Image 1 (cartoon, rainbow, N blue to C red):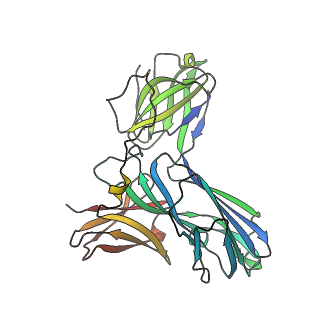
Image 2: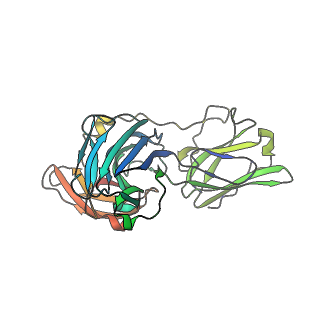
Image 3: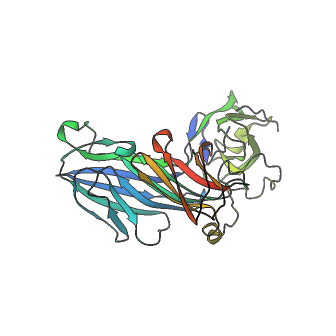
Length: 351
């Protein structure tokens, strides 16, 4: 088989059926907001199991909620705070549950109107994440595996009647921490399928698979991607493998040490010792909004200079700040208005 590379990223699980399509990234959570009437609002958080993280904890949920007069939740392990200001913040008061799980918050405002809130006027989800080894663009040895981050989630919020924007009474937002993969097309001529074309903006290794029924899959070939688009072709008619095709990420980078195609090729990760990740220094321990500023907390060693980095979902470093701690902890502030959503923070020791 031969391949021609232009432009690509690793497809998480992309299905084609003789045509165009888009491969959805892994869903991290769904956030549903509902205006119940008489000032009551329901916020339902559904946390998913994301295979790209050894651990993915939602540490708090903040909602831009004005004139709050009452609240409760469906579980006892959440504590509400800041409710008398412009935010209603819910945080865990015990060990973080393992996804998947669901949580419902009920909050009441003296205002009876509502609108769709965005950015700091909507909801902000704070996260603590430990990356799996197969997380896209994780080059290894450069970045720490533990990161903290946040995402702005649009949701319905109370407002004065004259500020209401006509939004429906129910709004659902799906948060994906990895960007979607755009599948351009199957390359074919008169039913002869000779290749695939997909968009993924990283250097990665995939396995192309075919199926006649979406249940039984056959490994066809390994495919290397190069950003931002990959075109892979072969001399064999891919229709021999069925009518459905998908590309599944095997590893980051162009991997030549690969098992035979007739073996069970799938996403695999090395065991990660969580205890070592939460005791080493320097490391990020959390982040918290303060107005339009995001304060990042660090566990450090005295006199050990380090760099705190803000990254987007592609692990592109957007901003960096140097810090020389005098004790075992330190804080660094970033302007949230200049960063995307979601965004992640990590720290590396200066050499």
